[in-house]
Length: 142
Image 1 (cartoon, rainbow, N blue to C red):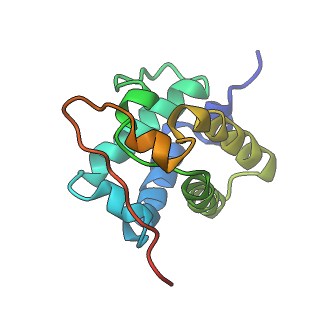
Image 2 (cartoon, rainbow, N blue to C red; image 1 turned 180 degrees about the vertical axis):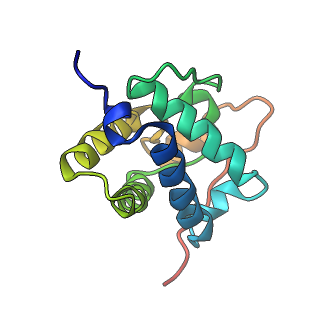
């Protein structure tokens, strides 16, 4: 029987460690970190671990909301996603995961970009969010 990506990377301990390192980087980042203000990092790490573990073939169940719903109010651009994935790559590589497995992990991560990336600021501003406010965070000056 073929080993799942989840098993190949080292299972839950490796994934949890990667997500701790990753979100330490995200929360410390001057732009990305602003999206998470007021959100408990440990809960975000847990949800990300559940989500990715499920997608990588574990028996873990992701109990969270659909990605498009949970990110609906956030103006997320391709630039933000590329930046985020760079931090994720660093965290995965710091876990000493084999390069071919890093590539597979990032490919799965990238597959969900279309669910959260916004086409344009104008289109996003015209989205009716009912009871939520649009979250638009300007890129900080260098």
